[in-house]
Image 1 (tube, rainbow, N blue to C red):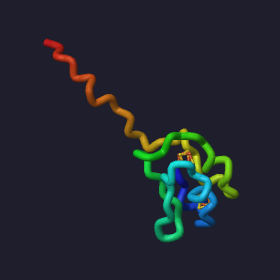
Image 2: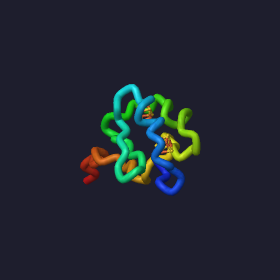
Image 3: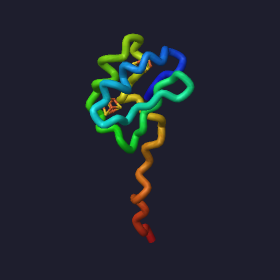
Length: 70
Ligand code: SF4
Ligand code: SF4
């Protein structure tokens, strides 16, 4: 969600986030996905467009689709 190559660590996203889901780690923003409500504020406020909240790590497998087929 945060492109660490683009992030300049300005902290704007962290201060705008309504649920405090963002913290700076080693000068780079990190989003806590469990807290994030996807409001999009950080994405709008990032001066270097380092955040894309729609871009998730490819990890959206449905785990509970284990229907007993057979
Ligand atoms: S999308 Fe909203 S809730 Fe999620 S990290 Fe950005 S500002 Fe915070
Ligand atoms: S607003 Fe953008 S550049 Fe600033 S800390 Fe957040 S992700 Fe990094």
